[in-house]
Length: 400
Image (cartoon, rainbow, N blue to C red; front, top):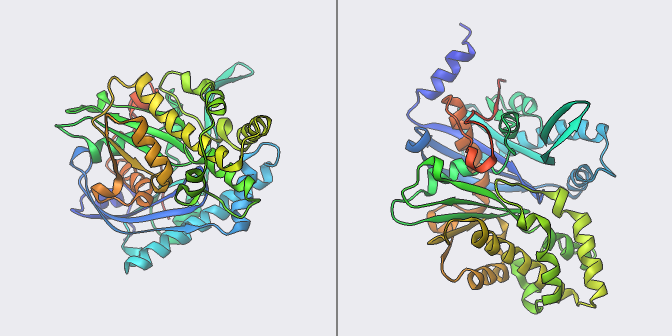
C-alpha cells in the first residue's frame, strides 16, 4: 500500500525519538559540517542528543569553484546551475558518511535538514521595474539530497523569512533560545564563523524578548589576509598564532572601526558582499600605505573582529550579558578569544563545549532543530531577529 505524504509526516511526528541529520556549509566554505542527532518533542520541549558529527572538507577544486560563485566578476549562471547540483551530491555524500560513521543505516534517518551554501545574500531592498524585494541564494540542490539518500530533506530555510519582509538572517536565534534560555542569567550566544552573529537572551526571556543580528566580520577578513600574506600556504591563522606575534596598529584599527555596518541598527545582517575578498584587499592596501608588517596586520584585523563584537553589545544590547557563549571557528583562535575577554571583562566567556555541544556541530544541529519544527508545522523564525512581519515556517520539504 502506498503511503501518502501526509501519512509519512504524521508517522515521523508521532515518534517518541526522531533521528535526523543536519548539514551546513558556512561563509568560510571549508566543507560540509554534518551532525546526526536524536530529537524528542519540539519547540520549548525539544530535547536532543548528538550521536556523531564531522566536517568533510571540500577538495581544493570544489572550494575554488564555490569561491568563484561568491564574486559577481567570476560567477556565471552556468557555473551556479551546475554547482547547485554538484553540491547536492556532495551534501548527500556527507549525510551518508555521517550515518555510516554512527553505525546507522541511512534508511533509519527520519529527515535531513540542509542549510546549503550561501553564494549571495542581499538584505537591502532592491527595486526592478516597479517590483521590490530583498533576496538570498543558497545552493546544494535538496532534490538531489533526497534522491541520493532516499530520505525526506528539508532545506532552503531563509527565503520564507524574506518573503514576509525579513532579512532571512540570522536564523540561529530560534535554536539558540531552545538550547540556551535561562531563568537565572542573561546570555549572548556569539557565533564566529566567516561572519559573526549574536543571539541575546535576557534571563526569564520569552521568545519575543530575543534580539539577534550579525555583529560584523568573524574570520572572513582574517582568513583572506592570512591566505594573501602566506601566498596560499595557510587558509586561516591556526590557533591565532600569527596574530599573537603581532601588535595591534591603532591607526588601522580606527580606520576599520569606521565601517558603516557597525553603526547600522538591528535588525541587520551582512556577508561576503560587504566583508569579502574585495574588502580584504582594501584593508591590505591601507596597511601597505601605513607600512604595517604582516604580523601586525593580522593582529589588527583579529582585534577588529573582537572590537566589532564588543561595540555591538555596548551599542545595541540593553545590557552587557552575564555570560557570552562562543561558537564557530573563531572559538579555536586563542588570540581572538583573549582579545574578547579583554574587551568584555564584565561577562563570563564560555564556549559551546561547556554545554556539551562541539563548536563544529552547532550549526548543523541548528538545522535539525529548524527542520524538526517544519515536520511539526510550527513556526521557526524570530521576527525580532530578522525583521520579518510575522512568524512563519521556514523550509521546503522534498520527498525522495
